[in-house]
Image (cartoon, rainbow, N blue to C red; front, side, top):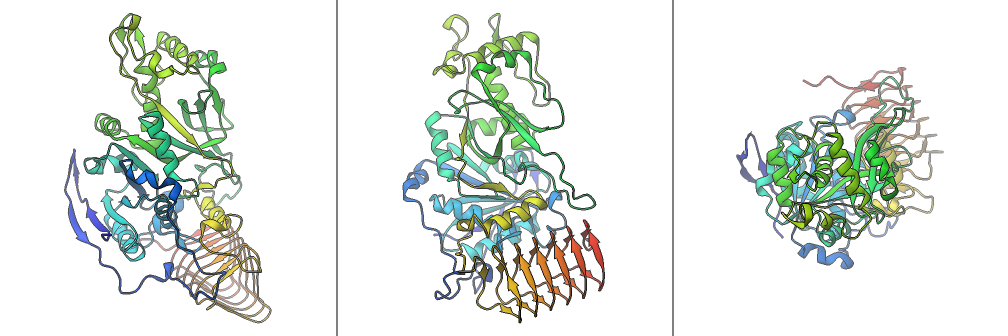
Amino acid sequence: MRGPFLWLLPQVNGTNINTRHLQCHRPKTRPALFGCFAPSIQHFQRTPPKPSLSLSTVSTMDFQVVVLAGGSSKNLVPLVSKEVPKALLPVANRPVLSYVLELLELNNLKDLIVVVEGEDAALKVGGWISGAYVDRLHVEVAAVPEDVGTAGALRAISHHLTANDILVVSGDIVSDVPPGAVAAAHRRNDAVVTAMLCSTPISGPLDSTSSGGKDKAKKPGRVNLIGLDPTKQFLLYIATGAELEKDIRIQKSILRAVGQMEIQSDLMDAHLYAFKRSVLQEVLDQKETFHSLKRDVLPYLVRSQLRSEVWLNGVPQPEENGNEKVGSHNNQLVQSQILANASKPSFHQLYALGPNGSSPVRTHKCCVYIADSSKYCARLNSIQAFSDINRDVIGEKIHLSGYSLSAHHNIIHPSAELGSKTTVGPQCMLGEGSQMGDKCSVKRSVIGRHCRIGSNVKVVNSIVMNHVTIGDGCSIQGSVICSNVQLQERVILKDCQVGAGFVVSAGSEFKAEALAKKEK
């Protein structure tokens, strides 16, 4: 299989994309991040994924796969930086992007386009992929301008999309829901878009913003209002980001049809979509202001699904602008009539013809695939989510990490060294080459590779990345410590984030603070 190569897209002029191809050379040695450890240490050895035979037909279904890996996310500062893009943030000491790539590999989806915001970030992500997946996947890494949004990222590479259908996956998903099932549902329903929905995470909605910084008190979460037909196959209504403490307003016309439409607020858009390419490209070309797939493209397709079927006095009604509110009273009444017929098998065919069965009207279907509640699906899009996912993956969802727990229900690399009377509790991970002094305690935490931890140190509910030095007598609770940080003696941190390379002076005490170097 061919190795990955990198597209650099320094400029995007209208529909023109200037591209140049750079070969990503395989490093002489595979990065330790994906190193295979001694087979005799069963509790730490990762098991490489095996392709799913039951979904092997997906690869022949003419789907092109795009992974949107982002760049630097404001919600994840100071965890992300110029040196560490979002895609390479560690989950159980593996880049979060690895979970998506291996999930796709399990489903025999091995030809991928990975889109990264910013050239520097794309080079880092491309270099890592080249070393980790050189003989397993064919990956094309595309660099797009920063802050273009998910819709803008697809718009930038749209002319490289040639398959009939496109599978778009967020690079921050950690899940065991098979994307092949979404692709199969999309084809079965002949939809223009199929969105994967999953149960809202117990710790909070996927889109809840980080409470890092000054105030760590939990704030009301955000939900999606999703309207489904009785068979729960067709997406009839969607409103994103509605805050729970605010009143939710729905037009009376929709409420009149509530008997035929089920409104749910316990499902989250997992940011995994199957699109009909021709429709997606048309929307991206015509709606140049659309920035987000979730907030712009998907709601627009749902609205236009109904609007494209609306006729008044024999005249087709224009589709509403993506930023405008619902149109006239007459449009609402006709929409209500359409929704009232949603339960009929011929819902979309019913209005495929114009008035009195004449003059065909363009229609399309927006569908959903609802993941089973037993499946795991979360997005690493906030600091809280970063901590939650790390703990889940070394705990109840250990199967996602590829590791096996020891008899003590933890994961300790055989090269790690523990001092006298030092304990590493259940659902903890201690990485390769790390050393801990005497009388230390680690609970429900992940410690990365090659860390140096002194004596009498307590680490609780925290994530410590690679090459961190922690002095004697430190206490770390509910915090994230990035790579190459130095904590001098007797530092106390509670609910803090410490950016890469930062030095915390001896005896300091911080609560609910973000500590980081100023980026040049």
